Length: 172
Image 1 (spheres, rainbow, N blue to C red):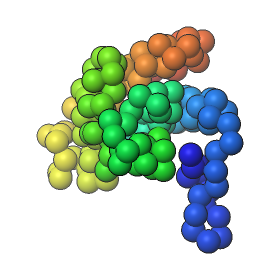
Image 2: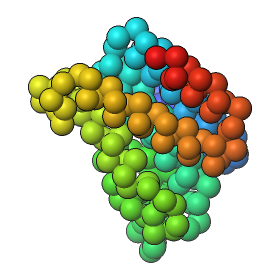
Image 3: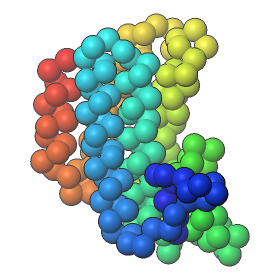
Image 4: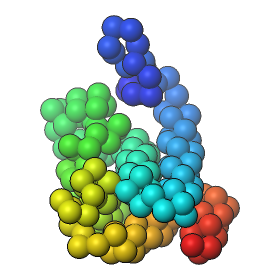
């Protein structure tokens, strides 16, 4: 299993030696990204905040894939992909990962993923070339996404951190 946090000089990624440490890192990353999203939203940067929330979602998907790595692949080709790339939750693989997690019993992953991708488009394209007629509409969806990610984090045992995130969100 590989980690994409830093590329080596030859363009490869270093090997992850401890899966649980990787999972803990990704959980921490998700919390940091959510806090940054809220701070950016508080300052009026809805597109940047949307991107941070999207990155939090990618981190959480990476956690879910990593904790279910033995169950995710249906065949050898998928196994190779999940162990080499899929556990990193690449953007172009998110829809398939979300569907597979729902097949494994996770609830509303496809819906959360769709919302996260919608906000990702808004982050890059602005309201004119995204799914949103106005900025306020995007902000409302962003708040919904943050709350849904907080639910996922709670299910993963991050109650204390979630309370802090939600308290900051409710201050807006």
